Image (cartoon, rainbow, N blue to C red; front, top):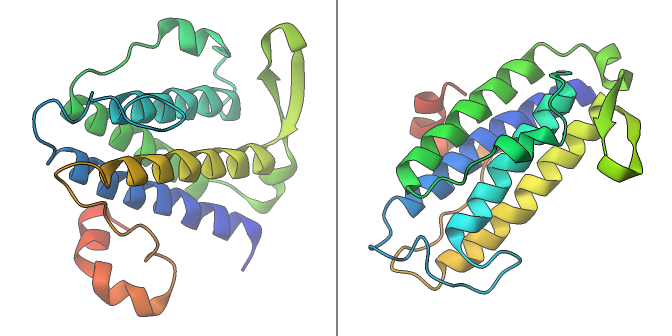
Length: 178
């Protein structure tokens, strides 16, 4: 498998994993989405909003959109779980499309990243994507742990890549177009 193929599968995994997390969150009882929790961010809502805002920041750099850190200036947190889930799904589909269009030589293409007072740093596209996926996995894991203290059981998130696991996820994969 080429690295570009792996990154395409990681984009699909992000779509699938975010869909599973958000479907679980949509089942929370009133107040649980915003309730104080132990984690890097103080609630499920804050963690999922952070995840999407950073996704948009890195995607802007990957696509050379020119917003850079201004992405955070125009960001507004989603108060409603359903609106956040829809926005995340929209982003995830754009990321899947972006990765589907990558060629192996694109992974070494350097794009300008806005690091504020630290300046601008040219980073490899493949490295930025890898970082984005690791960041997402990290924060989804935090939401997964937070769900353990709610009325909704955390969803399984590690059955995606293996042929053995496909039989458990076939309907979801079809629904998501994966």
